[in-house]
Length: 388
Image (tube, rainbow, N blue to C red):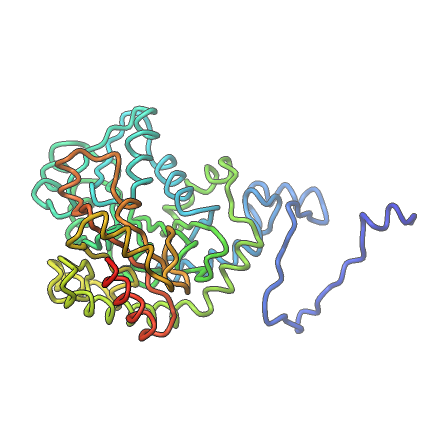
């Protein structure tokens, strides 16, 4: 073999069957081959396991999917390049022209835009209500044939709590599928409820380091099977190196989520007593309108604390710029604490009535609590509040 050939056909190193790496390798390969054409064709027909082309699947990405699914009490998962991507692919894969979607004002902005703009362009109609309007939800489902109900809990950014048992019961009763963005609650919560599809941004808690993007839809295998071919056609399977980094992050997921949630509880309690704060939105507080529902549905109340400053937007600007330990940026779930100012949170796609439903005010600030020492965080917040 000439050297020019050898560098393109390096020797293979076989790991003995009884000699296991503690950390699985990254399969950084687009293409896979079998030893015969017959076995290749069998794989393409779905008659035998294996891998052919990374756009469809990859061993590293598949390991992540099989780790994520049971965390949410389901048996299958599809991972893609970002949380928004997995929402878009799932909603496109589950709807067709003439379908109707029930969605909510208290929903992540890009999700609203996907439903209203993207699906709307292809003839999918929608009704948008408040997540708290149970009579309106029941009326809509009873009066309009609905393909999907799309919701989240806790909601972004003011942590309203959806009555998951009631919503899923109503959807099932009227033949609608449910898609729940469970990113705020985390991968280990709400799996006991009759939700058809859970979607997550893996960029947040799954990774934890804020250095990789990813998304996942988790469901029963029979529900995901029709989506698998369409995900492959979109070509947005999660890259194996990103999957490896997220898999590594999951090793500390529970430790991080519990510690960050405990820090968030203490910060919410301190903010609730501060004279500059008009209202704190955190489901772990007894003053939260749906605290009892949150206690019934959740093991931890999450790491996001939102609150309304009495001084409005200008106070919010001074507050966020005075913080030293909170990075002024989007996202959540990383080990660093983050803050979003009112000017970053106010939706531009809602009417005045819808904005009132959203409960986002001119002074609403959103904190994502990290793993810094709680006393350092409290001191930083106190000093910034004094500045505001």
